Length: 278
Image (tube, rainbow, N blue to C red; front, side, top):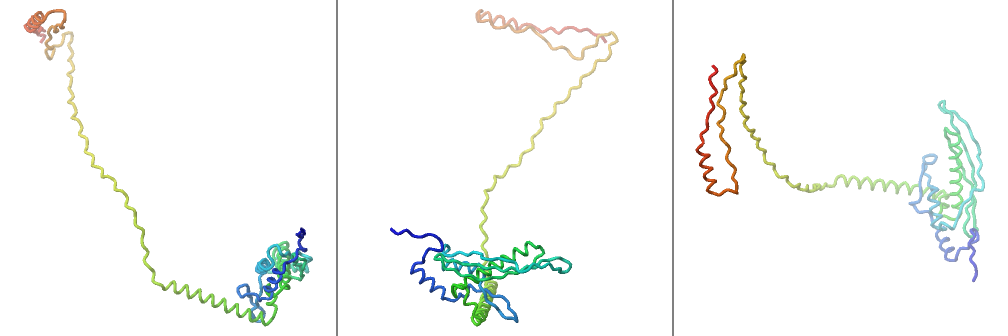
């Protein structure tokens, strides 16, 4: 069994891949992929942005079917200028980029980038990035019209710029009309969401005021007058006291208990004579 070569630059395209790639590269750049900018003398220039060129290369050659490398990157000038009393740096850089396909086919082209910035380092960085992006895009267009080569035809570029401008105007006008129609359309009343009925809390019965117990009348105690050696006269008679009731003894008979009860009832309480001390 023949071993397949997997080294990049030595992997051949199949006949089906070659036919598909050739057919796609012969097509013109679609209108939706073209960008425009203002050119000299009020003209409109059409061009292909760098990120769109990379996307087209991935679609045509597949993500693992091509690669790019920087062959040369050199600054053309670095100038220090003063604008409104502030120091700025102006930098120009030239780049040469090579694009290689997986079968070893490659193309090279030159790109240029220039920028102006208050920081010298940022000015050099931005100029290098712009030069590399421009060189890669110019190199990819060498493979066919579909990756931007058709835009280098002046007549095509001019017509393409007009078409893109007209298309953008139509899209803008359509958006305005859609917004106006949506604004003038009768608005349907919004249905308010039904509020969930909250369970009613049981009504609390009013609490009856607690009736205060009537205050007990305070008994004024009469203080005893000074006796000067004479014992005070009692204000009230002492309670009558009698002999305590006999305890029932279970050992005696019922008849004896009745006799003791009769004797007890016949006892008269004797009120002691306290005398008159007045």
